[in-house]
Amino acid sequence: MSAAGVTRGLEIDHLVIAATSLESGTAWCEDKLGVALEPGGRHPRFGTHNRLLDVSSPRHPRCYLEILAVDPDAQAPTRPRWFGLDDPALRRELARGPRLVQWAARVPPGQDVDAIAAEWRAAAADPGEVTAAERMTPGGMLRWRLSVRGDGVRPFGGALPALIAWGDVHPSESLPARGVSLASLAVRGLPSVVLAALGASVDLLGDPASAALRIELETPRGRVVLDAPSDIQPC
Image 1 (cartoon, one colour):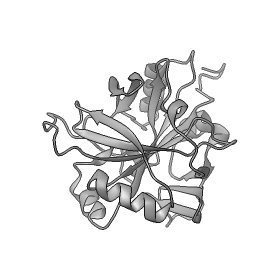
Image 2: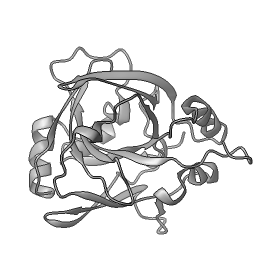
Image 3: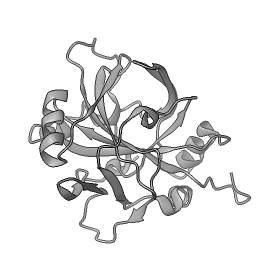
């Protein structure tokens, strides 16, 4: 934390695009972005699985995109799935095609992810409780700690990021470059303490009628702009 008690220096870690299935998400990616996805893994605790794409750029290093879907072969979790996947309104949106739903901000080594979550919670921007997660990869076990809302809500319509602190390995280290990069990520409606923590890593959306979260990707098909569903959900 800084001398003023405000956490700073968080970076964009990954972007979450939800789909009704990994098959539909993969087809969307190949059509929209012009590239193929890399294998991801399964998340037994949340009943989901994913595929990945490196979107690192000079402004946003070690950054990737995740296509996330309910795993039909997994046992249904006893809690709402993360990133709003059980929300009926979002499920109706996904029936029309994959959607950007949220993102994650990376906590640098040496900073306390639990303390940052508490700081945001005190500012009425609750990112959820920090929980340990892991998944197996061909290169071994990936381990991380992530803030997850117990009610499955996407705070501020997805503009508020989940907080993530990685173990010794980051997924981007094994992802090949595919010619897609994150040009910008913009948000609206977030408290000042959160914006101060995110600093120059994010831009601000000025139009009050615009989406809560917007990303711009440079791709082999040109620049692609994706919005999260525009309804801002309270914490």
